[in-house]
Figure 1: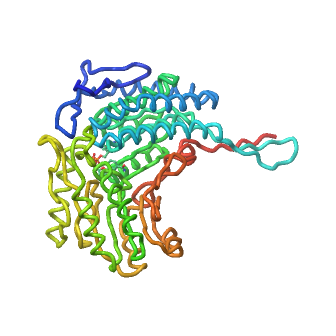
Figure 2 (figure 1 turned 45 degrees about the vertical axis):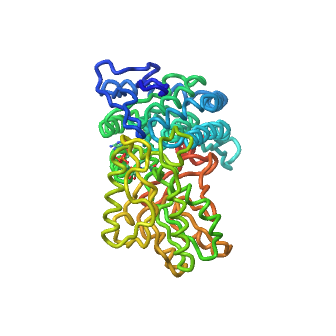
Figure 3 (figure 1 turned 90 degrees about the horizontal axis):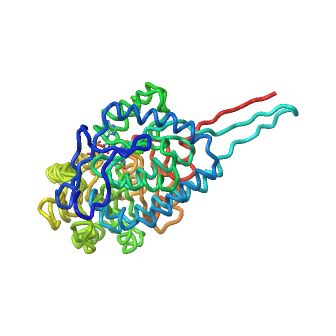
Length: 481
Ligand code: NAD
């Protein structure tokens, strides 16, 4: 195990921590250096069957547990995560690359969500219908059943916390497959729940070959719901598998965040908010602002000042306090961004900042410079496919209607941002944009109490907020005479 990477890479099934013994392994790599951090065991078919068996038993135990017990586990885990923040954040930075302050923010996000759900657990109400005396008609909310959950690597703490927190709060059991690239962070989230008293059967954690694991878990009659965060193609593939079993799904898929900046926006404040938000986690965020449509009166100044600020960001190892932006999470990402840039330049885009690999502190790391492309033609591949990287795309617009048409042009609909000082226009923007989340003069579009999810190809269902718990419940009407 690499120095400072203070976690044990194991599967957790039915209360047992399971090492490699005879199993295939995946080598976890530090994206800032290319160094191996440790070997992760991959689950075989017997392991997955054991996890499903535990989930079936765990569901019977946990659905019957009192709300107070569920709340105590969640709030206890929140406290433990806050106590362990330095160690857990360091693990996340070493395996995913994000700067330590961002990793610490992610630990806090997980703890805050657990605390929020600890309160919501006590508010899973049903209702009583108006019926003649001597009869009773009740509408009840019940946990949906064992959940199979799949998390991506970009928020290695926050994503497993979302899946685990909602399942535990709703009274479900869960088999979760966090990303093989960043497993230690998820293991620490699970440990916090177990240490806070979660019964061992309720949550199992497996790693493996993603398609093999998801097919196995979704094909099982034990599983009653699939929760997936990741790319649109994989989401559609899993939704088809789930449909064959008439299984419920929550799909949190990709985005291509439009940003509409009007002539009357407070430009300095807008840049203060947007530049760090764009390059957070090296742009590997599903709600990252990506397509910047800027009204023509301020377009040149906006591009110039955005590019200047991007050029000043210090890229380096996320453990280095001086780094504003870390490496990309795996070698696939710089390859993808490089190909996007080449294609955009070929069709006429202008590089206003960055545009090339590197900029980091180590030759072995997967670094890409903060990049700004101006005047990007609509036919450029990157204007149509999610880039998932440290790259901002800029185009001018003239009218409100044109801006809306551009914002809604793509099949994605996850996050959108608008900047204007005109209140009437702000109101109309909120109504007209097809997106699950919209920030108007802000980039703060989340929070433990706020639903997080998309429309169109960006998926369906919400995580976080009361809606995140609701997504793990089913409705039952009981009529009695
Ligand atoms: P990918 O599509 O291969 O994988 C995306 C995620 O899904 C990974 O975590 C992967 O382990 C998982 N996955 C892949 N196939 C799976 C399967 N059959 N069953 C279960 N899980 C499966 O892409 P990638 O190279 O890892 O990531 C790049 C793309 O993924 C990005 O372009 C972005 O669109 C998307 N992505 C989205 C989010 C998000 O928060 N919505 C997060 C990470 C990645």
